[in-house]
Amino acid sequence: MKKNLHPENYRFVVFSDEVAGFAFLTQSTADSKETIKWEDGNEYPLVKMHISSASHPFFTGEEKIIDTEGRVDRFKRAQEMAEERKKALANKAKKHAAEQAKKSDK
Image 1 (cartoon, rainbow, N blue to C red):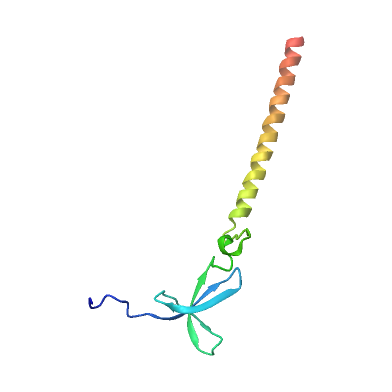
Image 2: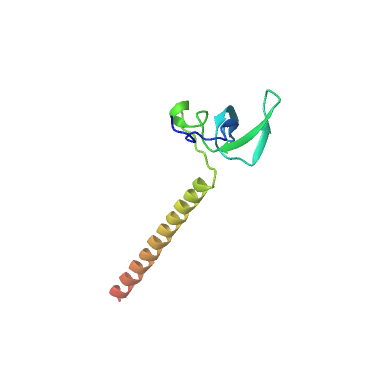
């Protein structure tokens, strides 16, 4: 076997899915500056995740909207603004058409 191939900092780490309220203890080399006291009374490094098997639609069989950075809100706001702009342009076109019709009648 090759020497110095395996990592030296392989230790127990808690991975926590903050959205689903799910955490599990496993071995990893993942770096972390935070720690957490686990169920067995020991303190372990903590790695926070956005998605895990407890919240991913593939594993849960249901679709959830996980909005960690406000993307859904921004998208909805952009849709509303686009709809308002579309209505404003339609009203402007109607006014212009009405003015043109008045000019042609005179």
